Length: 351
Image (cartoon, rainbow, N blue to C red; front, side, top):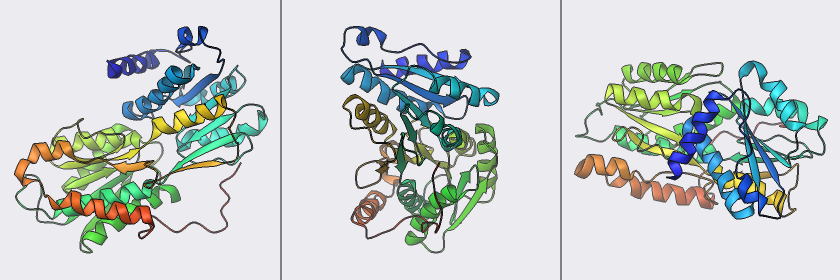
């Protein structure tokens, strides 16, 4: 039932030009809370799972905190105008996910000092912005380790003798390379001979670009390909099914999207972050300029338990994979393993 409600919201988003009306108004009418939240999205650049997770956090806030919310969806050529319109609106909090939209926030947050913003999936340093940064390299580390163990397994359809796994990114930035580095570190800890092939589609990317890039990697011998960003992730999953190979989902549990073709999924607690940001407004604890760090230790990131793949493969599923991943996750939590690239010196991630 819950999935159907969210799917309906997404369908309406696809046909409306600017924004959805306030959600949860009936609940707010009987509640003393008057907190009004806007979720600002870019049309076509966040997949259904990513968007559903954000909305799930808002729905929880509506039920538990009595807030109202609206969803604003902007086309590429109207993004800045719609962002300014939203910032000028009667909102107590404007949530801005994805790194692309953060450029709008960096350029304009200072013009609206009394508006509180939430930057999700990145850091925007400003007195009125609360950021949430996910330690994606940690989840990628575990995913890379899982892929390396899987590509060396025997007796599994679609797994060839070559030790090759792949990665499909979009923009070749330090942030993207940081996550890719985590993936490579995890793979090479398991087997230094594993080859990791990476492709960056460039610009904003599309699911079809992700599909084509993944097909190219499978043709190069990759057994498992991971999507680097949600915009191309669905295309990677489609390519895995077409080629009879395997993929790694991202952001949310996508193991059941292409059953039997998704080894595991990298997870981000997007719904939790949304709820925490809204709650900070309702209880008066909102502090701009701070960052919520979401990592393995606080369950902010992780990977799935591969239950779907275990059911698909039965006795052929390599039983050592979950055991080894549990050990690696423990080391990440205690700081015994550092995933990702060293921090850049002299870089100010600020407004």
